[in-house]
Length: 433
Ligand code: PLP
Figure (tube, rainbow, N blue to C red):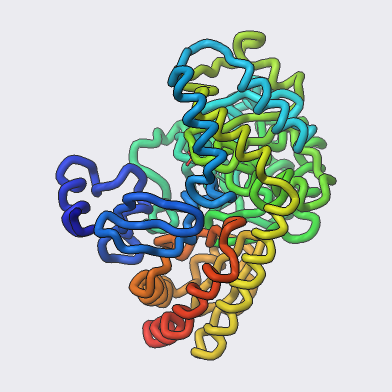
């Protein structure tokens, strides 16, 4: 047994920053990252044997809770048949059918290993289909770390306060237009000026990587109208919201009225294993190799263990699961707001279905990245550590959603609620005057 500090020290000697993904390093909240030994249901344990209620949920996948016995069983059974074949399996067709069953617009589905790959491929596909180069993304939306999509990205880039990344060629960045989220006028102007060059608009249909910023009524519909009018494609990046905020993601949650050309999925669709997907109109998807000229491939794509986890997770994520996640989120959101009110912490809690986050020290609606960045990160830092000390592991960044699962039941929620009042007081003391 070692302490988190010992683990961090050891890892930092051989891994940059001691982590395999930057936000895990606790850079924006300070302190020593929790090194996880194991997790089960809504709980996790660190290397020192300390127990926490987990509100990160692997950043989204763990909608059924950690290590669901049936998902683990499906993975174990798959593992006993072989870890990877580099050849097609029927399980891939089964998972694609499950995805299409929930989101019929995903007429065909291609599996990859990460959300980054899915979004990168969707953009390449859009460029190949339209024979145009420009891509529009919105500031504060995160679509993974490929060159084309890193500009003004939320998530870890927002957490670290970076404008983007070193190493992205200027020529690549020049092919991405970054516009403010929820700003139809800016998009209309961009199309007026460069519409004939725009291959696609990629969006988080409910933004969840700059804190939660839901689309304003009509925003997503306007994206559809403008893209269609100018021969560009609309890509719904549902890596985070897909199969989490409803059985059919944000697209299902908002009433299935907008018709994107392409979707990207990740997280829940892989049930906690490395699996993501691109789905969309069959005529577009068939432009992918081997049928079409747009190349995409992967040694581990459609991996049998990951596919087994995804299939079992989607089979288990039924109406009852989504209802339980909704109730848990609504209950916790109300308790958090009450605790912050009592402690006198100005705040804005925003929701997108069962996803929510708190903006600290601001009360006006947060509608885009600029307004999200007005929050007081110091207040979150104090709140985060008070919660962690009380055994509740929140996302180590004010720009991330709080992730609940179907097993965050009354007992678990009560544990979180017990920790809230003193954490709210710590946030109040840390507020920038
Ligand atoms: N798209 C969105 C909306 C995401 O939230 C993320 C990751 O958080 C990604 C893409 C990238 O996915 P991955 O981390 O699997 O590469």
